[in-house]
Length: 335
Image 1: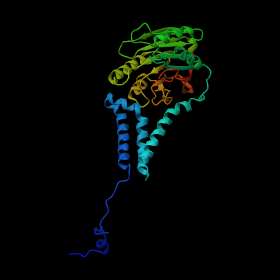
Image 2 (image 1 turned 180 degrees about the vertical axis):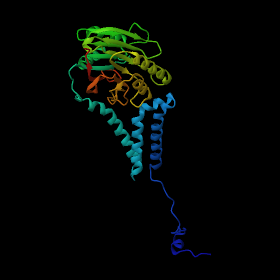
Image 3 (image 1 turned 120 degrees about the vertical axis):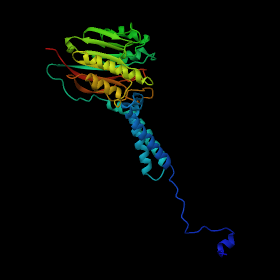
Image 4 (image 1 turned 30 degrees about the vertical axis):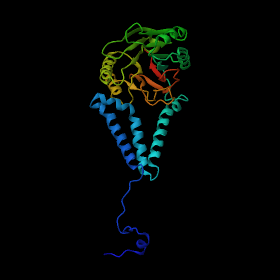
């Protein structure tokens, strides 16, 4: 029988073997950070999976956020203390930074080029005024503040339609699709509109099309509003249909509106490739309620021959859940 130590005799307790290996303990928050990294990476993979099945394209809306989650929890894994709180703080700071980014970017115009001979500079804008927005006066004030040469208005509810008449002095040339089922858009222009057409229920999204005169080089302006999640298949059919229509449309084209898709989406890639357009917008515009928009779903596209003179900016929400987006472009004049 092994002898008991003096301490064991005095305390009556057995002492641990000093040579016995200690149990390895994971640092607090390590498992949570590993799971956070796995979540972020999985989201990034799914954000690209829309090219395999269009239903996955919804994850592309949050590509920036999945990248943020991945980076935040990787930082948590790299430090030794307060892993989880630090990771969560990084996520929170990242969300604030994403929301502040369009406001910072829009503080002052960022010139990219200057207009040259044979061109005309136009300020263009797109604004989803929101079907539920009851403050038509704020919408009118924001349209006047933006002072675009051409503006596409999306989701113009009955209460807001009265402001079109009030804006007639500033925008004498107007086209709308209010008489067509499922179409609630308008185009306001300081330059003459030679013709307009609209479609509500067809294979593509509801749109309003206005063809401007020679003062704008015969520019065709479209205001578009596609379906949104969870109607991914319908939205995919819509973007393919509008891309086909735009491809056949002659002359220079300016396409604006609420596409319910981000720059990482397959939806926008279809429009760019199928209609040979270039997207010039990238700033988050939705949601506007907390003044920290997270998702870029309102866009402006240009056809070849049109040039971007001033980077896209956002305006003020004016009671809508979207921010308007504006840019300055150069349009070639017809000889």
